[in-house]
Length: 376
Ligand code: NDP
Ligand code: MG
Image 1 (cartoon, rainbow, N blue to C red):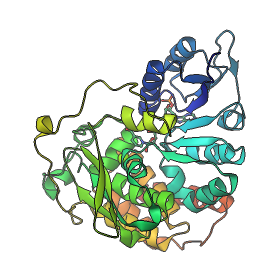
Image 2 (image 1 turned 180 degrees about the vertical axis):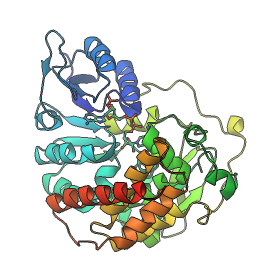
Image 3 (image 1 turned 135 degrees about the vertical axis):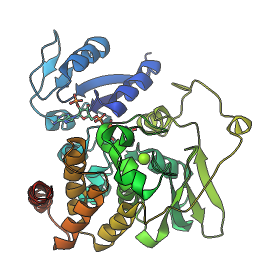
């Protein structure tokens, strides 16, 4: 008898995470059946993926025609399809939130790459997932590492999130102030989408990950530490109450956390190409993050501690500032200044509804764009 395959959909299949997920699935063809693939504007790549992986459904920002495949009209159409056992949410930005909630309401497990979903609405998402008995398995490598380390969460004292430090780790603040878009996009360890790569240069990515960890694992911000670890071999760690530290290590590749999240709780050789060798790695370095040079981390702690819509504001202002930087309208360092200004003006709503979250997001984006237009 043929064994049952896990039925999966990928939203954001044409992105950095999405394409790597398809590489994982290609190696594990006997384990997966693809229900749907969804992308945005890169229709050419999506068509190639659809022809190769033959899902039943496809979604793109504009209609796409492939023989035998039904084109649906929204990401929610995919995420409400109960044929799915699991959905990989690999779109970027705020568009991940509604489809994630739709999947949760339909009792479908989620492999979550899109950190903005938790930064914007972590309380609602985690509460609904708990109520529906839905598993949310993190793809983000740090959270995936912590997920792998935790055995008994009640005995964990704190979380230790590692940060590679990005391209400006050992550069001066002046170097950062003069940084070009090209320099900011030249991440030494990871090849990712542009938005997250800029966030990695300012370390806002780490800030967003602190908030993501707070929601995923339910730890206070005082119990979430960040340590810089340039080699990106230790993907994060936890400290138990007795002082034992458990870390997850591996070669820096997103294939491993993606595979872990979509095959959980099983493990497979799958995409692994090389065995790990401590001797080849030879050394692992750690240092304290420099909050003067990377103030975005402090700002994220601040927004997280305020809670409610403060993290919505942080996320929206930062994202708009990153887009403005990529468009050449502001400097890299302005991203912090703009985000800080927006946060200082924001009156956070406690326990916001989803509508209030989206309203806040829209309002902050408009204010941020307006503020940036007057900066020059
Ligand atoms: P990319 O920019 O490479 O990919 C984004 C994906 O979202 C693309 O498939 C894009 O489609 C799709 N998309 C964008 N807008 C829409 C839309 N309106 N409707 C449907 N699809 C849309 O991002 P990454 O893969 O780097 O990141 C994805 C998420 O994962 C982010 O939230 C990021 O923070 C997180 N993450 C990424 C990591 C990485 O290593 N890349 C690591 C950890 C987390 P198209 O290109 O066709 O327009
Ligand atoms: Mg990460």
